[in-house]
Amino acid sequence: MIVRIMGEGQVKLADSHFTELNKLDDELLEEMESGDEEGFRRTLGSLLDAVRRLGEPLPDDALEPSELILPSPDATLDEVREMLSDDGLIPG
Image 1 (cartoon, helix red, strand yellow):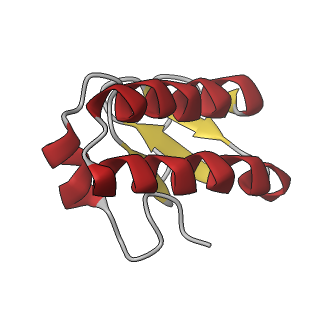
Image 2 (tube, rainbow, N blue to C red):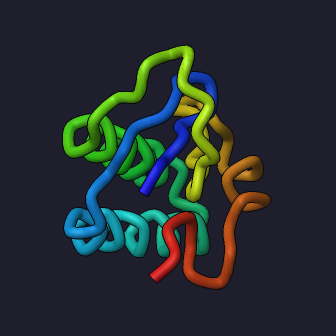
């Protein structure tokens, strides 16, 4: 799957990594619902770090369609809330 981190670029991520990412996504959703700004910041950073660590960066000039778009590390709680689906940021 091709994943875009807003403001950074795209990475190719194997489907096998989504179990780990979904755990972080669930945690992020809980923190957002409770208004835990500090926890939200920490978990968003962990989620984006995991995508960077597990994914293979695509060249800057690659224009692949992104199947998943994640917020930038400095996104606000309200900005991320607008990006959510019923499943959180990551479907599944």
